[in-house]
Structures are given as C-alpha cells and as structure tokens.
Length: 78
Image 1: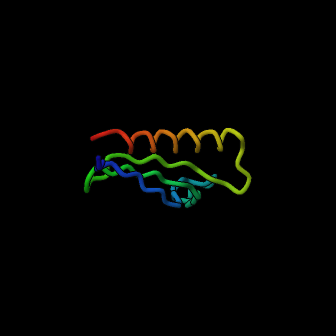
Image 2: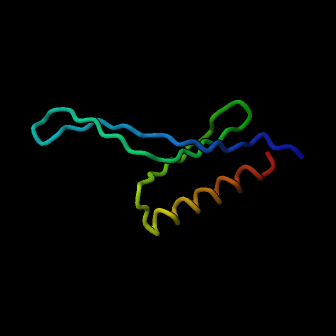
C-alpha cells in the first residue's frame, strides 16, 4: 500500500533578528535540520532541530526522537 505521507530531511539555517545591547538590530543564524512533513502536495508540519559542532547527548536524543516520530508518521496509512 502506498502512503501519501512523506518526510523530507533538509539542512536548514534559521535566522532571527534581535536587538543588541545598544538597541540596534542584530541578525543571528543557527544551523539545523528540518524534518518537513508532506501529505500529498501539502506541507502539513515541520520540526526544526538545531545542530552544532559539538552536539550534546540531549541533542542526539532529540534528533533520534524526531526521526523516529517522522518515520512512524510516514508509515501510518493515510
């Protein structure tokens, strides 16, 4: 049976703009992994997880949990 549920995995930076200590806008960029949930031709959800050069055990566990959840969701019959 073919499922119309697909999870796309992408490296994706997130950028935010905040005020610095002097009140001037500062742009920060964070590297991460996006798990994008598609149902047919529609994006129905997205999970973004930060990744760094030295991930912690908690970072690894969060990624494993997100991947397990995404794979389970994609296998569920639509």
